[in-house]
Picture (cartoon, rainbow, N blue to C red):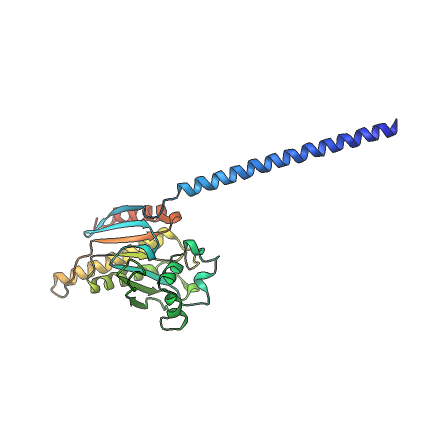
Length: 257
C-alpha cells in the first residue's frame, strides 16, 4: 500500500512539474510577444528619416528641425561638432551611438575616414570653438560645405558652450554668404548624455544673437551680408520631438518673433 501511494505521489509530482513547465513556457511566449509588439510600436511611433517641422521665425529666419543624418542633408552649409580626439571615440558603442544611428560615423564614412584622420593626426584638434571648413568631394555628401566646430574636452562639456557654437556658426555662414544652413550638435553620437532641449535652444540663441549683432553693424554701415532665411536643426528620431518642443517654446517667447 505504501509503495502504491508513493508511486501515485510521484506521478502527481511529475504531472504537476509538467503543467508548471507548460505554464512557464506559455508565460514566456506571451512576454516575448508583448515585448516584440511594444518594441515595434515604439519603433513605428518614432518619426522617419526626412520628417521635418517648422518651429517659427526670428528676425526673418525660419527655424526648422528635421530627422536626418548630416551626411545626407541637402544644404549649402552643414555644421557638425566634435570633441577633442580620444582613440576610437565615435566608434565606441556605447557610450557613442551605434554605427547605424551615428551621424559622425556617417560623415567619416562619406569622407573615406578623413574626419578621423584630421582629428587623430592633430591637424584639427577640436579645441573649444576651433573651426575648420571642408569642401566635400563631389558625390560624397549633399552639403556644399562642411563646417566642423570643436567642443573641447568631453569631460568638461557644459551645455552653455553651445550658445557660443551658435554664434560661431552664424558668423561663418554670414561670411560664406549662404542663405541657409543645417546644424548637428552630434553630442549623443559622441557619447555625451546632454540635455537635448537646452542644447538646441542654446544653439538657436547664439545664432540669433550673432545675427542681430550683424544687423546692428549693418544699420551703422559697418557690415554687409546676405540674409539667412533658414536654420535647420538635425535630430535623431528619438530626439526630434524634444528638440522641436524646446525650440518652439523659445521662438514663441523671443522678442524677435
